[in-house]
Length: 518
Image (tube, rainbow, N blue to C red):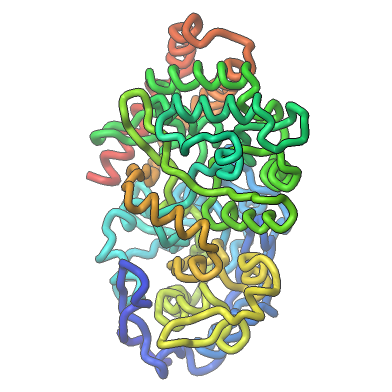
């Protein structure tokens, strides 16, 4: 068996560097070694042995992964952060050599210390130089991955890049109505009201939808316009940390003020009447029908809607800076999270843990990272001036992410370090302009990276948090839809949360956070 060696750095486009393999040092075993794998994700519910990316990885490493997925096509349980397939796998007692899944972190951090998954700290230190070097550069991410016992039980999917979502607005509508780009929340409100009342689409009907969202929690994120907070990370309804203290956005005075104003906006028709029910088709429908005015959504995909200018005369949808709150703050709460709860782990019955962690390490090498991000050289991309560049034929074949999934690339249920250059290549000029605007303004705020509970903390959290969160969401929707008065009911709301065990939840969150991040 050949030993993995440390080579050159990861792709230069990343801010984080780690050693990579030399060209002749990818082989992990002399004779092919088969390892079973369970892989679950909404976009690829089973591992496909025919993926071109996997076939290249087999040839390079000698490791052959064999699908052994239990419970394929089962949906993700968003409330618990675990998939039904993972629970079914555990109940069966048949844990494959490798388990890859979306939202795997809580699952392995609970059952790893109980013996279901192999601890990785020593294996990484001794046999995974690329992963170890990454963690040496980013100890905060290493801490975020660890379970309550201090061990790592999974290798995470690590997103790259800073900027995710932005505020977007129909600038052709602004021009038609003689309006300036809004700079403050009051100016934004005035623009939305003009969109509602002054017929910017010119059809003679009051059918415009000034503010809309594909995911309704993005509406709640608007409380930042009144100095509130909503989601502590890119996971909706997440906790947040301020000055080392764990709290939640749905408790603050800014949140109360924000919900009160969003309820007013909804009552005045400035917000999509179907915001809680329209779903993921909202952006496509409302923009293509020349009805939507503004939203908060992803840079790359939203900028792509400027193609509608071929069908809607003058159509222009541009990112703009977060409107300033009454106190003058401009905040973009959403950013690309540093570490996802997705990735893969080693089942406790795996008799080849060393070879498996070396295989995991391959995906952090230069060749492995490029394979995970861009696909197969000569098929999806070519090397140009030492960097992978997608072929025009590949870019023209359809949505890039979908095309990459189909060949086994950009799989978030695989532990790997994303390369943002893959997305920048198909990000159009409107989105690139917006990213540069947000970079200049420095509007991002720190993410909450999550915690790992011990058994007692987990019991407290499981006992209280589900019902607390449901109550929070129920009240915010009732308030926005006009079924109650925020100011009049606020004290009772806080008292009810306390009666439901909120302080106990915050206590265990704080305990876990202090232990995990010192």
